[in-house]
Length: 401
Ligand code: MEV
Image 1: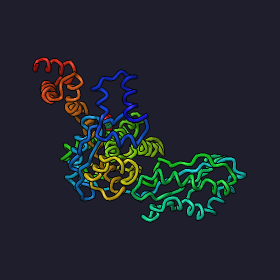
Image 2: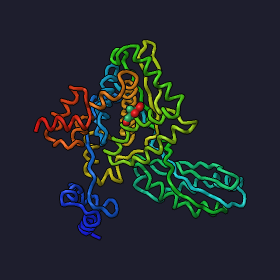
Image 3: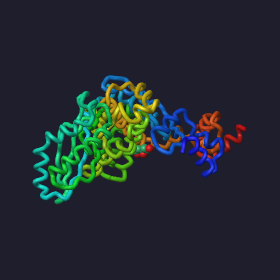
Image 4: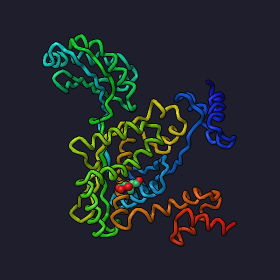
């Protein structure tokens, strides 16, 4: 079906009004129609800018696409605290990603393992016939690992330098390219050939020293450290701790057209590598300030995929003004750390709900049927009266009417 036919069909089947079907009519609908299948329009998200970020002595304005109130404000706030002691210091590994090739039914697994290593150079050369642009920019398959998974399962890892691309396409093409060769070498059957999202060689790191006074005093530092200890020792808390980190990271990943599922999969599998653990770390420096750090796989690209096709993703990268995928990874890690610090600070002091609900008050007013032009006014009254709920929003609206 054409886009118009699809829209017409859905409208009829789901009994949508003209107004409802028009919600899907975004500026980018025609581009969206080329990106995925069965498109009927676009789905819009709020896009905000996190401020105050100083990373490796550069200022950044960070575009964030997220539906949750208070995330952008919280990140900006934590970044402001970090600025007191020089902001974030970040580093990104070389962009090495990993493609897996699964082999079974070998004559002998020990022989197959050593034979693959013996043919390493040929396999790498063959993989590197796939993408000449990547090679031109200094990327390509650089090395091979062989892992014995069980008595009859071997896995070959292609270690591929993806330069400024996320790399999934390049890697998947390479793993398929070397399939026959690996089959011949191992005398086995090759099954899966696919990237691994546990991007263990492509991590980003960031740290910041959060001034104890700017945080609210030594007592706050103590409480944040206790909150961190809670996440370290309890998986239920740790899941939410890491979720808070991903609030920031995902929003940037979405805004730049990157694959947020890949980033999520990488983050949580890395967190689980030695028993599920926090992705951030906290301690105190000699002066009693809080030192926060993060270490997280960060497979992001600034070329290829949606980063190239989606005009907003391209423009968001322009706002962010990063020159490489590594720089984007450094910003993402710093943002995740800021987000986590903001959450721990709020949770260990006044609780998350006051700030959250204040920022959420507008959403509540709109959900209660208050027109958007006066939602701010209604939200303001709810905050002042410390009664932030739908019933009260309706009551205020009736009063205004
Ligand atoms: C909410 O989206 C995120 C938090 O729950 C994170 C956390 O608890 O650390 C506030």
